[in-house]
Length: 466
Image (cartoon, rainbow, N blue to C red):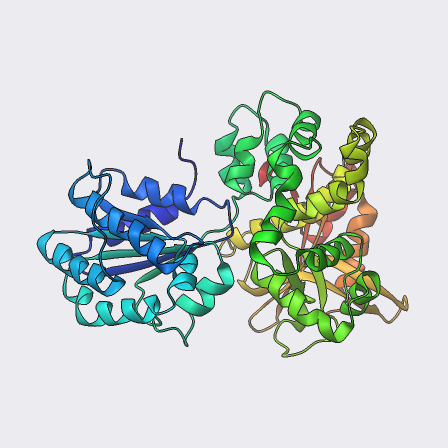
């Protein structure tokens, strides 16, 4: 069953209806659902579908030849190969002129480009001189995000400026994940989506018939389970020094957020650390964070690093450091610890959900009087308290006349009035004339908090409302 990606699927079908050449680039991290999206798009349509593999150019050419011949004769199993990729593309020109609408999909394009580097320049030449004159629908797909962004979409790429659409597939949102599990309540889906990072394949491994504890045990704490070995498997596929990268992720999961702290924990010199962090950022595993007030600065001393990928964050927080116990079958104490600590793990996920909720209401004047241009976390000094403080949500409109300030609590008890009082106090660190307040709660608000919220016009938003 195909779930989600409705926006991307609609856009692809709309492009298909255009009476002209189209070139779509689809990319995203492994397991994100690129191939599933393409297969859904191709339903009811004839296409040449080729997947690049980590093999040499001749082997890729042989399979590319097979894919082309199978398009003409679906019963085709084996036959003569084209002598070269040049000859194969010349034949594609013939096919595209002969057929009303020819679709050519090259999946895992980075592998083909690695095996045969001239392929990008060859595609450029054929697009410019032949394919633009007919109705070929070209799709390039890849899991290597750095390659796709630099070598396909980047301005130095031979293919730069040729695409007509690009789709960077993102993890599933809470509402996407709810389609996976219609029989579960919203909180249960939110937890499953958080520990899997919203990756469709990982979500499909979770059973709605099992409890959260059982799903964690069977998928993360069982040595034969896919997710038990998945982080190291992905690092081995994508990077040359997986052990070093794993150490960096472990350090961040343990609380090291600044480059100097990560260097101390890993033993990697601070000056040598930047390329490692950049690669992890390119892969979407780690992210660089700045206070919302620093986002427009070229450089900031307040930069911190955090694990962006939800599955990696869960694994390195709870699984990685306990592998020796798991290998010996000691899992129940680990499960007890995970369930106890899960609300703390869910906190950042709830912050992210709350920010996404406000973005979705950007043009709702009842909630957002003037559209904000920036919204995010903030941390910095409080001159009066003489200490560093943090705020979950801070944002400003274009003229900085409106400030938006929020606090998010994923706890089983209602938010009390003192949380709102602290939010109001800290909002005074920002000189915006109009201040708008928001409290986001898993379970609700005390009576005193509701009374104070009415006085200061604070919006009270529960998880069920989001």
